[in-house]
Image 1 (tube, rainbow over the protein chains, first blue to last red):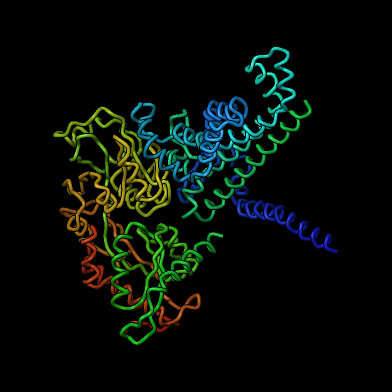
Image 2: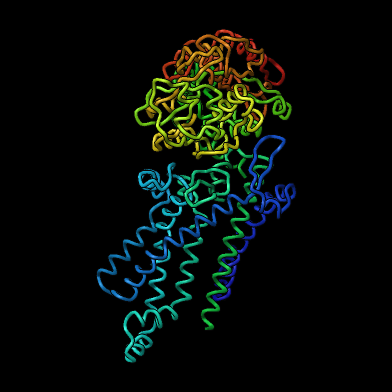
Length: 285
Length: 353
């Protein structure tokens, strides 16, 4: 009897998540329908016009999809050279030492800082620096946003990677050492192949965080509705255009913003799926 | 969804305010809680006026600065007593909702604030501003800027225009002005609460734009005047229709409203043809329904709404406007508004006699 009640409670709890997820998708699709119907799904994705003029309204998601993908990709590139060494330091070279504990605590601490604080730091410290170094005259832009995003996602990538690196069996490593392998060789030939799928999944998690980041990006990207032509030019990401314009939008514009939200949802889902497939493949090898 | 969200927000604010209100007014009716939402441009003025009103009258006013467009939408959804807007409703918008009246509350200026090393005096003409924001004038030492400012050394640096990323009454006033003075702007971009600016960068809200200008060398942007005053950012003299270069002030804003005002007070006073007029001036309005019985509102609430508007039109409240860098309404606008207020009804019966 007790077991049955337990089962029912578990079942209900497990059912809530798919229902919530389904509800979100349903709401997004119904509200985005007007925009897709008016502009056509494919046309909405590939149009770079974002024109509010009454009577000539024209909305397309391409500039924002480009902005989101550019900032995320750049953030990932900037993040790897910092997160991977931290993961190796904590998970392999100084595993279990006090230094490693301090370092991993500090890295984890970065994950707990609210994004508005990163935004403020970016706006008042990094942005003037970028102007002073003459990288970009106006400071704001894809590059500035990506740099701060990179710092924000380092803890996600680093601490999870470190866990996977720690989990590599000692037998394997000792076997390699006994064959005369150096430490670098052990890392390259044993640690990375074994922990590879785990490290990969930690970067997928980091990408997920970067894709949807709103506040920091809105403060630093420049908020212009054009396709960025270089990494120093201004743009807008999918999350930031929604944050900027939903307050006063109605009708077709509101529907277009919700459609962008739906596309962001789909991209995030797609990337997670790719991540899962890659992890599976890595395990088989 | 958003409708629910804004109702909850308005309700929360109203509830929070209830705690401090409560005493009854002289008229013998129960003190009311009024809620409004809309423009951020007149917010510093409203904060003072609402505070004074509740001390005098006992009624409490909660106002959410969510932008002109948001305020009008809340009124259309019938969840507020009044909307604040820097842009009057177009004829088309008027036909889409129940009859409303516009009551101007004060006048203000949109200023061109800039950040240039060593430059504290700058003169601009409407056409030059339009070309800067259209990206046609790219450098500070452009010959047209130099011709307007012969006494100033302008740097050979690129101009960084800053504009609003969200829909805004301030943007409407600014682009309405550019549309009047520049045929190029009128045909390419036009006037609106959101306009596709082709170059520069954007920030959210008047404070956001002011912040970016303050932080960015060689930038220029448009903000409500009080935001430039508060952050101590320099702003330009603008050439008006009589070719005078004018700084925004209570006097120069008032001068802009010396022309004809239509009976419903819906008019733009940008580029006014008057001596000493600051050309990017505007009225800011409160908009209410002509028939006050909607969404289960009581007659007392309708009366409180009208008393608030009467108070704003009074000399006492109008005098506050210049203290917070706005300008008082001209006599004619007050007169017209009092007439309009008398047409407001509850169940078809006029409320004010």
